Image (cartoon, rainbow, N blue to C red; front, side, top):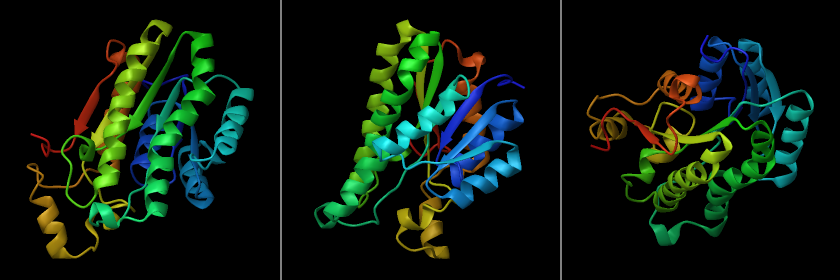
Length: 245
């Protein structure tokens, strides 16, 4: 029960890595708000873990503000997990459409800015709080043809570090985790097509020989967001089976 008595928000918590983080947090005693643009997914995970489902489009200031108002009017917040993310399909960098670029920018980057504006004043008022950004090995060791997705995750890693150094005197810790691709709804988008041959090629780049799982992310996130990690801030932890070595 490492998160007993704590309240956490997990964006994009209705599927994939976010669902794994939400499940682990609930198992460790946290009250979990599952925030997702997919209301059915959010409600299913929230029902499973005894949490609360809220609809949120993390790329929208109004939607994030509404999320903050709903959560903070009901009590305090201890942990914010910026997990929601999207990618564009593999393509030459100059051929990615402006629409796809804007979507990646807004969901992967602007969302961190919006949630920071919405929740950091609350954390500062309490002199405590933890923010966890779900970045990617793509921001450390980029793959070809995912250029603007790679860049968005590199931005998230840098944002994590600069947020950490600024907010540390306020009692707020900020870390990131860098998963390698997992068998989640985004996998097909990363690979372009989902065939045994493409999966085998993808897996050949991961020394441990398997994809990241939602459970892997939940375990790493739980540690970084718990009091056991009270001296850890500004870290971008690779949870990648050795891909970035």
